[in-house]
Image (cartoon, rainbow over all chains, first blue to last red; front, side, top):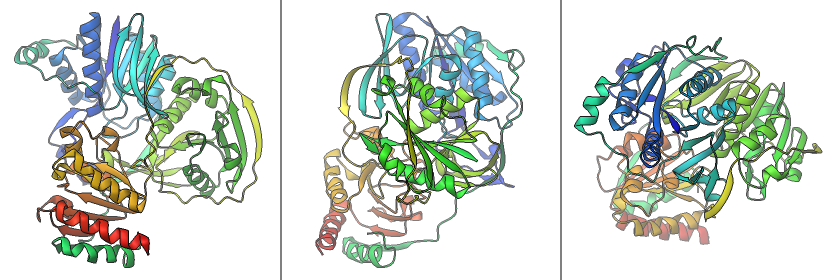
Length: 252
Length: 309
């Protein structure tokens, strides 16, 4: 069995995002990390690999800095690494999905795990889109997945509540926050990962013509700054604040 | 411009947010057709002002939720300039699936929409706002409670289409029913607790407050990570939910940047924290420097007094 985990490198969630000349200034971001939900997908993929002696391929699509995310995945146990090299210009969902779907096919994986959404674009389109493109079954909002006989059993937060569902390969799971604690790399893992080969491939290597983006970003801006609020000392001020919520703000 | 709207459902009825989608579609000159998955909420959908047609999409595939099967059934009817849904977990998946099926781009969690097609959406969980132009045909999901809802004096034409797509995801066991309590993303008032609450059992005080004024209870990442009793579904922030209620009350939350990202666009923010230097006060309209143990009982009394009047 070959499992693919899709990971995206994003600004660490503790990073401040600065806007300069109408665009987010990437050079001001001090730390890049694997997107949090992708980390849960990676952890579950590693558990599947351990229990099924499966082969795990980590795939990312991004500029050259994104290689680090693959190396981090290798340090905890990913067997092979694929970097779809793009120059960093904005791609629309169709373009990203066609590249990632082609890479999954190229890797020969029949099971795909990824985060439910990335911490930068906050979309959540990639997983279901790729599943649809590849004709894989799709299970979203998953917190845990295990193999049961010839099929997969996953816990998901569905529209009617928390459910255990069963699905067969080929299939794709998008991860919510998982129930498994994330493993941290050990020194040996980190050393081995540095030597691990990364397969760098382009759109044309994958035989994909991504065409033009249908989305053009006009500008980025910082969220409006709120004027300073009113501050009160002590629990006695609660009644004052409740009064203001009713009279001034009119929200209760 | 033809707009296909995928209705949002809640149990066996239409979720009222569907009216906001119709309102948004009409605001850019869209001719709205509403698809009701599984035939749920058809009558209510037909009454939304501005909706031209309602299609009850029925079939065995709608008995349980399978994103792929639903997207295929709905996507076959979504030949339009724009496909629109709600940026809920299910809405995002369905619209992304339909968009991939039709080979059109999708933009999620849109907070403003104008002809052109010009959209804005928060990125990095609200640490920045992105304005972009997208060509049609395209698909978008809209953030709940950011668009004006259409009225309810409509009389759209109703038709029924049977779709039988293959279901690949089988439900083996229901572990917990979707909570009856209001979800933080739907609520107009959210009361969130942080690690400053000291013990997960103390969240019961927040639930009492929420019940008094019809709000939902949220939590900071620190609280969710520290206490297994506080589920991730309550988490507000960059790795949880982004909320935009009219009133957000943060209790015992220091205000880490990830948390601020998820709630800073709330209309009014009240912070209760014993540390006068807590960053949460930087975004609060009304800050109360106090322990929650002292402030929450007073708040409960004040709100109870207000409700009984």
